Image (spheres, rainbow, N blue to C red):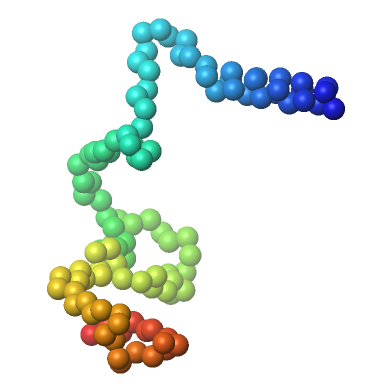
Length: 111
């Protein structure tokens, strides 16, 4: 039992020391810790490229030959930015709702 505990401690020590390797170049900057909450800093993108997009025109001749039969492709939902925002939501207190039963299923309808 003692041999097993010593072996586990030795392996744990090796794993921890491998995780704390310092850079071989002393001049290289050390990475800064992540921001609060573990989030990375802001990532800025480059300029938008003007390339053919199947989202805009699937029949564009500049697009490569499809790998699958395009007649078998079905819609996966609305396009990017295709869901309109709820600009003026209307809320009601749950205690005041009389038009919905306690065990009634809730469905979403679109106007």
